[in-house]
Length: 468
Image (tube, rainbow, N blue to C red):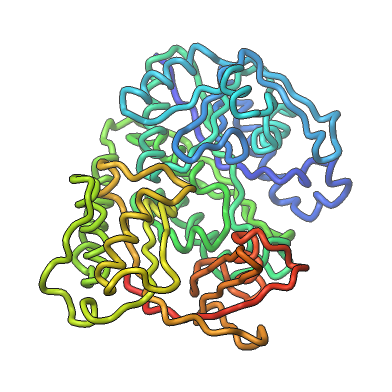
């Protein structure tokens, strides 16, 4: 019977490697000390296999990626340190068990082999999210096989269940295993961050590390998705998988350090496992999710409810629903442009709208645009019936656009913008997460339109009545 020895949260800033930092790494000495402490701890345990889940490998929107090359190798050449190179034997026996157990649970898995790498033009090299933590580990202990996993943008609960599948596979093997969740925390931690700054970055880092230190799993998986997104992190999903790996164990958690002098949060923590109690939190986590969605449904106003019922009706009958009775009078008598946005597990799932009205009233506009958001947004596959229970809706009713003579007339929290040049146009709704300045708002709208900032384009603004 195999055994999980311990789990670790480890950051992966390339600058922490001396061959890259060239002295700058001393600014994060506490992180270096903590990584060496972790690595020494791993040496004492002498694992047969180390599993690393990384945010910088083969990341797919709809699947977890498991690398199945027999040899796993890579270097830090892209950061100017090609001499920092590693090669590990892949533990394909355990990989097979992980894939098999995941598929039993209907967790979508992408096995990255030569064929898939060729199809998607994927590099056959380990990413820095894997190499940087192992740089420290191998200074202390190097006689292990490696498993390389890249998380996907799946629901947090499903990533947790994937972690459970990993541990089930470990127990059915004969391996001693260490698990590393590779990930940095907020990338907008301080005003000197090259990624921008938000005070929510510090809030996110502190909250996550505090919850981890007390192993408050339900609160971590249920963390506010707006806060997670605004913090601009890359480690949260790695943590979700790790918590699933730890499901059922008594765990002693300890945060070793946290710092961020370069504007990115680096947290190091270790999780020692004790008795396996076989009491899983998985069903509770799924129940909490269903409860949250039900609470959202109960609070829907007529606009949001109509959008939801329109898409559900179309998925079932493949035709638009008739305008129902009992709506507010203005939905029958007024005309306006309408945008319908769909979100699933905190991620955009579709957004389509009309700047000026195309139907005889707002109700018909919502019905048509809800269907379009679910089936005609070219960024996404059409919505399927099994997804409907998890989709959250918002409806924006637009005022007529007004021309803008100066950017001083704009406010990204109050006004949406439309940029135009000839037949090209791009629109961005107001008050979006992460869009805090006029410059950001216009830049995104220009990219959507395919308009260069150097071109002579026009700007219009509009307001919205938001229903969510």
